[in-house]
Length: 116
Image (tube, rainbow, N blue to C red; front, side, top):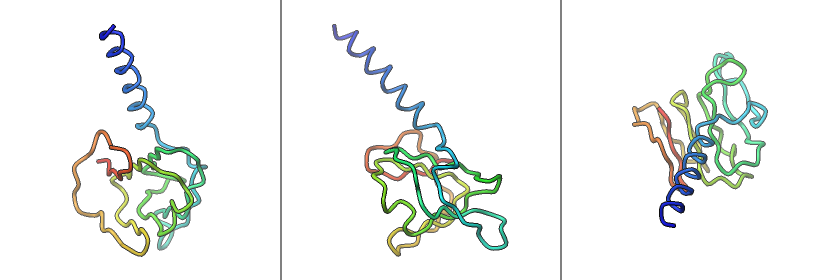
């Protein structure tokens, strides 16, 4: 019985990890060009997932900024930010993500993760 429960737990954990690795579709984000249109800022998340894996490119441009209220109306438990993001403003607190961060393969609930 313990082996069966352990096996089911492994399958569920694997499915959750695989799901978390999939990028959300571009249509889940309202975006705006940054600067001269060389990169993208996420202005608003339009989807309804609890786990959001931001793609590194939208409209074939790198995602480099996340706006102040981008996730204001969402019920996130996990946010995976691509390495291309260098600026993340959250409730008027600006984070500089241009420093090197180690990749985090798994994220705990209610966490923000930066993927490398």
